Each structure stands twice: as structure tokens, then as C-alpha cells.
Image 1: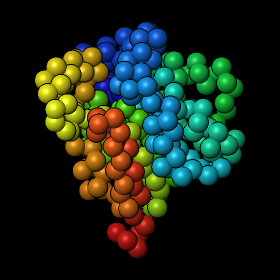
Image 2: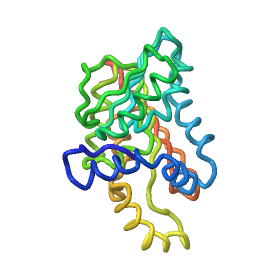
Image 3: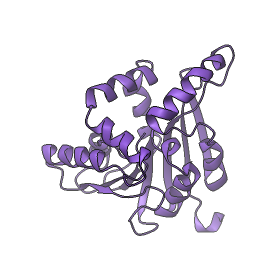
Image 4: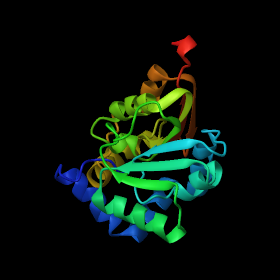
Length: 224
């Protein structure tokens, strides 16, 4: 989760701190994903149905964990653009790009709810563990919609409180903890926002409902 501006005090400081402690971040995600991080992240990327040559925008790209898989799927003829508000995360993503020599992958520091890109130029938008950590998660869904060409695909991987008893009792402890350490906005109903703006929406839950992948398609002009 990586998307509050670095000049917003607590928000930017949280993710700049995480950027300086990558091993702790990896351990944190191991717990959050209950050991299924690789498979769930792969499911989320697969929901984009990418093809060689596609242009992909990632909102809240953090240290660029998804860049390798996104690059592999779009090939050298495609483009991957990651936007993140944290200076530390953007620098780590830039270092990753340089280390791999990717000429068509770019990391940009900016507000993911107002990404510095031209509208409707992307074939796909991806957001992994980021929208619910933005000050305005629904704004991130709107930004994704506006950045996509008609027919373009969105895939969101994100977290929500436990949905079922008796595990819901853990929310009393976990919600305040994660809010403090990740700027989590658990009240945000990201799947509902995706359903409101996109068509052919599919939502799949994992790890007792605490993780979900919500995917959808921007309507073609004829469907609008």
C-alpha cells in the first residue's frame, strides 16, 4: 500500500519509512497474504489479460514489485508506467528499472488519484495493495477509469477487514494497527466503486475475505 503524498506528514513518512526497510515490508506482506503472495498477485495480473504491446499504468506502484511480470507480459513493444506518491518508493522502483535495464518501464512520483498522464491512453490499469491506502480510494478508481481507453481493463488487488465470524473479532485489533502502519482506509468499499464505474466486473476473495481481486472493463463508447 503506497499512495499518500510525501508532503502530507504522516502519510508520506509511513511509506518512505517502509521504503528504507524492504525486508520488513516483505515480512509484512508474508503475513498479510498468509503465505500466498505470489499466487494471489499472479491472479491479479492475469485478470488484466495483457498482450504484447499493451500500455499499462500501475497506481501506487511502490518499489516496483509488479514491474517484472507486467514487463514480461507486454514485452519490449509495450509500456509500463508506475505512479507512486512516496519519494522513497519511487526511488526504489527506479533502481529496480535500472538494474533490469528496462527501457519501456517508468516510475513517476505523483498522486495516483490524479496521475500525471494523458487520459485514455492505457490498455490496462493495475493497482495492488494501494487504493485502500490512499486518502481518497474512490478517486483512485475514477483515475483508473479516466486513464483507460474504451474497452481497457482494470485489476485491483487490495485488502479489507475480516468479513466472517468469528474472525471478524480480530478487526478490533488489526484495523487500528494497519491503519497506523499503512494509512489503511478500511471503510472504503473499493469493489463497490469498481462496480459503479466499470462493466463485466468480477470480485474474488482470498484468505477468509481479507484480500480481494476486483477486475472490470471500461465500457466501449457504444455501451456508455
